[in-house]
Amino acid sequence: MNGAPLALVVDDVAANREFAERLLGGARFKVTAVGTGKAALQVCAGLSELTLALIDMKLPDMTGLELVAHLRERYTGSCLVVASMYDERSMIEKAFAAGCNIYLVKPHGFMELFQRLLKDGVNVLRNGPLLVIDQYGPRQFKPIEKPPAV
Image (cartoon, rainbow, N blue to C red; front, side):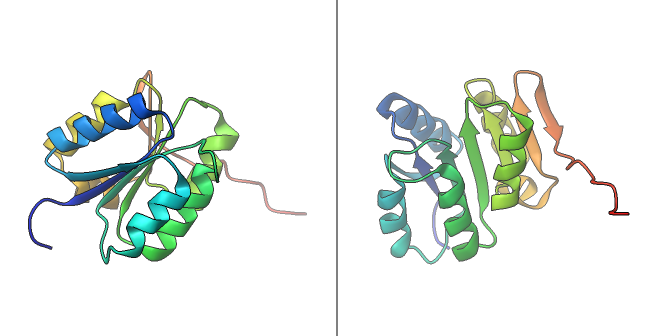
């Protein structure tokens, strides 16, 4: 890939989209920002590679989880970040099950994500442990192990 790595921001709120676009641009990404899942899929139809996607959980035409699943299937090596105001264990588990690498709780996690992109690079985030970034900082996601059926 020539030039800056590609990032996609998907958020239906223009102010959030613009903030994330500036943030990722500051981390040296070439950023495309859209407001719907359908627009994201249209953008991706022309991309053979996508380095990073920052996806809002609630979109007007599909859930962020549906979009993550689509993107994970198409771009197996991408770093997928779900951004949400929902700080609930069940939602976090669903996001990781759909294929995200990082679950970011709005608004707390954005600066931590930015700092990690600058310090470690996207490859470390993409290939490292699954992360939750919330008001307490980053932590490794550990799924709850279910006891074996008797």
